[in-house]
Length: 251
Image 1 (cartoon, rainbow, N blue to C red):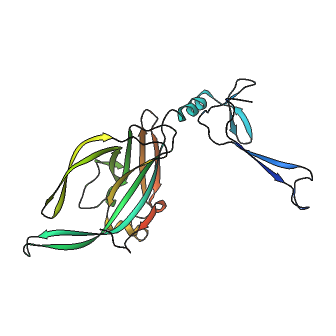
Image 2 (image 1 turned 90 degrees about the vertical axis):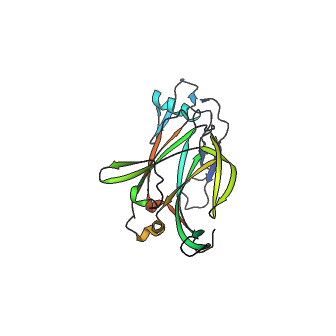
Image 3 (image 1 turned 135 degrees about the horizontal axis):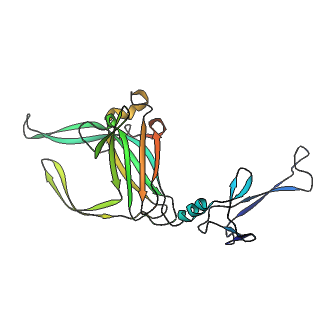
């Protein structure tokens, strides 16, 4: 009854097993599973209408719904996944006060990792993301946000990301620090099923956020992918997966 014809579907038979079964003898319940299709939407070949499921009924779909379904196969879909990584980092710094030698320091580093995954069916050429993080969650010694935004009583730092990359052209050493020289930036398309990653440095004590005053805070985000409609969302800090790497040495 569909135009196009269904290409992929599964049929499962649930049969009577014993006398306690609610299925009558000689009968079965058939479950038909129809996955998402790149050919959607499907038209009813009998009345030339498009239908959508509302509760237990099939109702004619509105024009807006039909156009939205058609757009899903034309535009990429970017979903964000957040993770909090806490690790130890060993730095060597030149100390002018004690003479010509270096001092090794071990620091706790806390990073908010944002994975942007293209869950759509088409390539994402240009991707932008606006991530709003409460201002007091950022590392104090490095300002990473692009600007401040006040919403109600809360001040946020807005971090703007894209899917650009820069090639490293040269690496030099200056005062025991590595200095990298980069070339011009270029857009790195995100293929369907592939991920682009961004990182935000947070306060070192944020790694123990379950025991900190920062518990239960909201991070807001908006993504743009090519000419598709922007997608917005929020995530609570207690919902973010914590990856604690402090028990093993990482340099």
